[in-house]
Image (cartoon, rainbow, N blue to C red):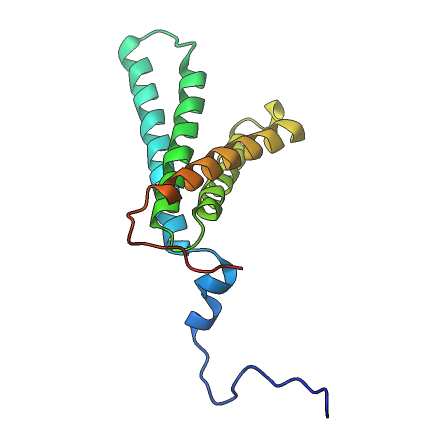
Length: 156
């Protein structure tokens, strides 16, 4: 009885999602992560559509299309991470890293569905690492582009 810990939860309180979704506890702002992911995915799809339109208009093969799509995807991840880092109320690099990893997973699953024989485990891990680092960098830079009135909240 002497060393008994007090129960931190009050039995009279109701269940609410705000207790689960506590930004100061988990350090993630899901709204910022969502907006960064949507921006990155939009840039990626618009660039892919522009590349396909270019091939259709040209009527010939384009050898630089793969590089164009890869670089536009990295630009999308970077800008999406930057937006997530700027909109976040906690540490911006976490949201940027989340945007990079989520979009990297989407790209990995899409590549595995389209042409699974061309990818090895090493290339898939490399893909996730590169996209995660570009998102991390975008989130880190985006956190510094916040207006001066917004400060970080404590996150553990």
